[in-house]
Image (tube, helix red, strand yellow):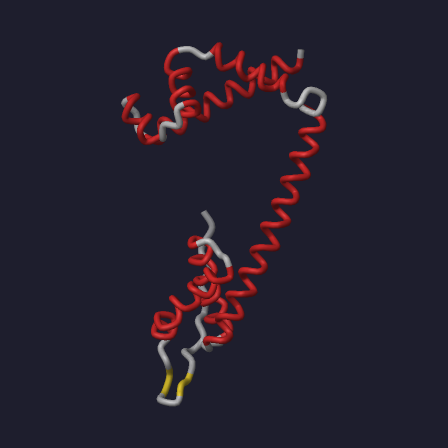
Length: 175
């Protein structure tokens, strides 16, 4: 585990009446920055993260002014949108290549047929778990209760089943 770097905080900003504590600046501006990010279109969790990041930038630079924090939050949001757009574009390119290589000839019918065959070969708890989770839409929490396991146990079971199905499908398609 790597050590967490220590950050040297700049002195609090000076106001006409004296220094304004950093905590007070953050407390009085945090909700407004978050609301501004939501207005821009950020999801709540993204707005939370970007609000914190904007205040960290302000602390590093010693720029405890509302316009600076709002501008920083906006720029961080725009950067996150660019990055996610690039990521989505790369995913689309990869998916297109995969489709062309594996599914274009028959529209994916061979993969679906292989999946159906492999699911039919599952037995016992694995088959029940797959049916309940994917066909019936039962949550992992509900499955854990139903199967007498912890939720993490269901997560692990589903991961193992997916790996088993992947291997089975790849074997059938290789023929």
